[in-house]
Image (cartoon, rainbow, N blue to C red; front, side, top):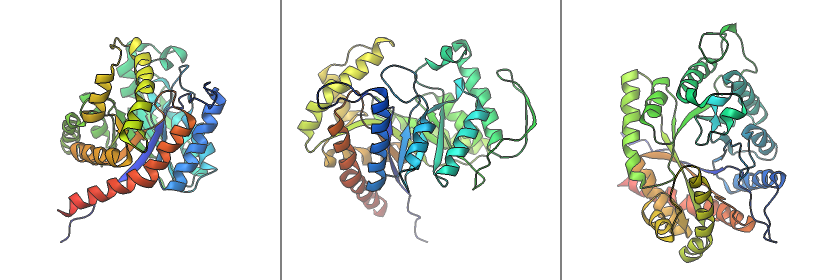
Length: 351
């Protein structure tokens, strides 16, 4: 009996970063949202499998409502999967999240995917009236409710963080009978076990350090699923990147942009400023996919094998990247990187 070939998927992720225009100024928030929409149309034409948009509520990102932007993209595309990356379920209502994404699923002919997460930033909690002290309990309880809603039957449910439901029916139902759902995890073993317990596919956010260290998370996920009696689905991963015609060009263009963004985030988290040496180390050995198409393709293939992942999403436009460089990254990713990664992985499977 021949071995079944793995189905690989490749996506692009954006948080709606404010991009740099030709005159050196940053896009407005409205321009940034329209830019992402146009970039998703380009990705669809290039055959990229997924566009995933993150939810943030801070001044350096334009997208606070991914499903609204994804609906606009749905009207202009035909094939690309429309995902959030992530939807911050802890500070949202599971019923409303299901309703919004089942609606997106309808207008896109079944292309919607919601990736649920606790969120790497915390601005949404005070904004929507939630206490950060309830950070873990909020997510646990709301995932529990969301899992019930996915059955698309009347729900009777009781919790502490929102009103209880009794035989509550939620609409619209999806046409297929199921809403494509994943759990996004940044590095917490507890979150990996939770995803397995509910039978959700796992998306690993790997933004620093060697991807090899995340292999243990995949092993934990599969072991936890076996113990829980659920299905262990193929694993996905996402990481930031920048692609140019040569390694030298990519590094020179990307370093100041990555540094600006990482230092901005790090200022609120106690990180030391990023040095060029640290950046180069991440490019060579860590989780920043910066370089020529050949270099980036080899590194993605290696990382996917290390993590045992079947999906890779490239976080493009990381920081105030020039509009033309964002487009060039997407073009090279779709036309050159993805075919090369598929070829490398296929050759490895054949050995």
